[in-house]
Length: 170
Image (cartoon, rainbow, N blue to C red; front, side):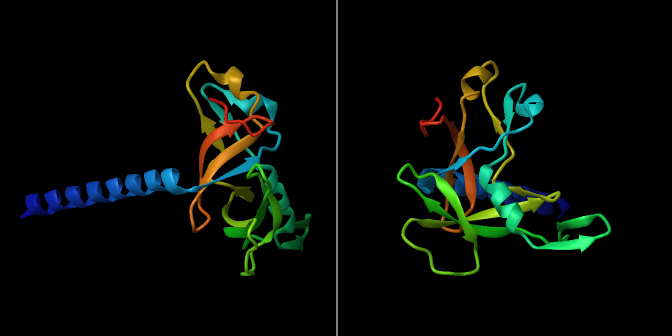
């Protein structure tokens, strides 16, 4: 009896993992391309080994518009600040720029909703690091944009980095 339960559990877990992989592959294959501008990062942590620490310009604009409260140390963001959605405008190169926090308004043709997450008091998009092949750090020093695939729900997946001309770094 225990073997049957263990076998069923194993098959169920493997099915869940494979379903998750399939969903991510479809997201990468069918998601809409959007670029987000990188913000400066502490140079001491910009390149460490085979990854690049990331921060996005739009995150600062979102952070500045989140609710704040006053305490004995002055103004700070509410502990209740939580995950949300932001409306961005896309230019001709598909670069997203901050318009407003989402309040359920209807979107215009060049506008998209993106999901952001609050983690440790900071606004995050998809990931805070980009991993690359060891020894190729030099070419990624030119990175100025993150290339994302976004699905219909506004979930982002980072797929590449791009230079100042929004050309993907190969």
